[in-house]
Length: 192
Image (cartoon, rainbow, N blue to C red; front, side):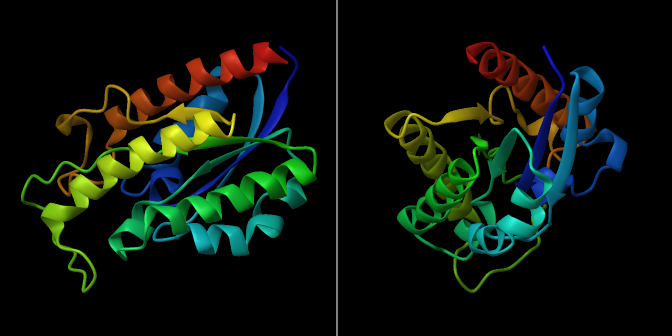
């Protein structure tokens, strides 16, 4: 495998909220594969924000691949799945226009363990878990229908792999996310 350049654009799941920089999945992944990896995650970002900064934070680096992982904050704002997927679709087309292969990241689940303290005027905490689960299914189906590569970061993610808020993976969770990303990327790289 020749060295590839990958930009990871996303929200706190990409930025590694709550863990040390060297423990987030993108850094771990960069240490296990012959890749140059740029983390362009911003905690709290939405897919609209990601789309707005897509050129400066992703395209400008001229990567071979862009991993696009977002939607959790959009759901927190109670935006529709169609709105979120529309933004992700726009980013995939933008990447392809610049001869960059997009990879859709399926976000991790939310395990409401009673410690989630953020309040939203838009959606209540019990609904957040259901909405994220529903969105994961919708996003996976979109990736299949649109023939997009994807990484399912939710695979094998269990409650003990998250911080007390149940939303952000802990260091062990980032190790599992790294494993999910590595397996998918090796398959994608081998395709061509």
